Length: 427
Image (cartoon, one colour):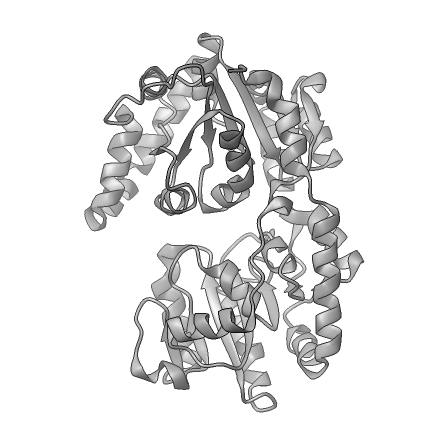
């Protein structure tokens, strides 16, 4: 089984290598990251006497944000925590969130890469966050008798369907985990069906519910606008958008402007590599009233649409929003499935999404039933926004209900730590 996986992984790597090389031509940081993922960190990280070392693997920016409180609690309990991330965005965010912790690129899943990384880092346990399952590193950890866990785990309908096709393989891989902490009972059933040991799987909740919240005061709002050079007004914040559905949002905004002339729209694309394409799309609607966060200009104060083409700032803008629109849920150049609405809901913002939110089915079901979110198709988006803008009291009530929904589901960090505690050696 390991040989088969190695051959398939190597073939996939070779097929993707032209793309990576082209990326490397435009980004020296990308090539440096790729080199570290091949051969491991350039220095040995000595273990501190008497302290267990926990390796937390958070693939990208979203997983890093999910793991914030988990890592903080682990480090506070006396563990020596090493964080790895795979993407450049994830690495940048991890270094910003945990400036005092070692943050390294995750190794590639080749046997040589994983063995070298483990030998240099010397972890006592590995914790993978959400849907990051790498058979090569799991085999390497097991060969050394080291503990492994998957936390805040979930399986989208599409992933479950694909995994089930080769259940004979994934069943063996999932049994390598000593603990699998899942988000919901539905996720637990999926993992057990795929072959995970039932006694090793427990529902501990979604780590995203436990994210820290900064309440935006009036002075903070003014400071955020002064810092960006952008005008005050009534802001709609469209977060984690994808190409194509941004057109749906821009058309709705264009329809609303005559009625609400002080209205502003912030568009925050999910994929940073699509920033330029999104900017060109916005210019088709507002050629002279568009601003970019990365390129301040004197005309920004007169702009109507604003592109957030930087990383790690979306949460701050959700706190300023009248209404939050969550992407990957309206028709566009993507398969749909939605993105996490909790960052907006926890800040008391009413949430609007399209109907294609199956990747976050449980969260959206609970949030809509609580009255904190609405699912509307592209034809109903303008009317839904109009109702909320015309009735601020209803919008505030919707935001309050969303925040209460999040507050009632906190506790995933403590439940997860309790579940994985037996895997971490006591100092």
